[in-house]
Amino acid sequence: MRTQVHFSTNVHFRLRITCQIYVHVIVAEIQHNLIGRTVAFAVGGQYKKGNGFHIVGAHTDSPCLKIKPVSKIEKEGTIQLGVETYGGGLWTTWFDRDLGVAGRVFVRESDTSMTSRLVLVNRPILRVPMLAIHLQDADARKAFSVNAEEHLRPILATAAAAELTGARPVDKSASHHPLLLDLLATELNVSVDQICDFELSLFDTQGTHMMDIEYNHTNFSHTH
Picture 1: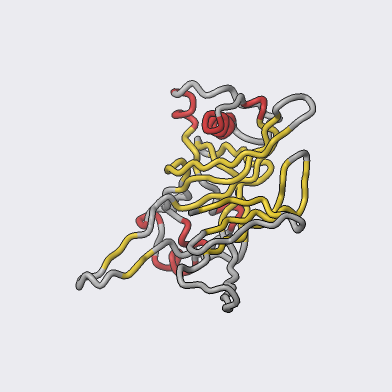
Picture 2: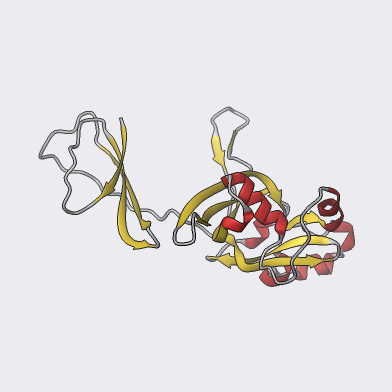
């Protein structure tokens, strides 16, 4: 049995054997949006009242690329996104990956209200390309150092492809390219005009896999 609870210090809830609890601890309310922290725990099937318990703490974030407040970049016939690094990542592992986006979008519901919506685009829509090997000599490859501002800009589309797909004209004063805004609006089933702001992170859409020549499986995943 899984239960989601919005926790309050003056509200009690009953725990049962084998129950799994997902608790959202509210710490603030902004524009009618509840901001908080997440706690998850399970009660074992052999637990007896009065026995001890274990608490395990972990962070739920990791180094990643986040879309900047002003992300629109058009350069060399490509539509790019301005991103910033979050945490101390191993940024060379982000090159030539199929990237999606996820995060929170603030949506205007009326002239006086706004809600936050979670969005997950779990398919490849972005890529940070690495220069082809035949365009670098051995010395250049050895001396290469990642410049986050220049080298980590993911490509969203080519300008030619955007034109062929009938993308909306680019507003020079806009902070984000219409292709990105149209994508978010479609995912959330809202109009572009309703999107006030967002906080989005990039992630690798390639899942983990199991491999071992002796079938004694080892789990491999993306290293940040």
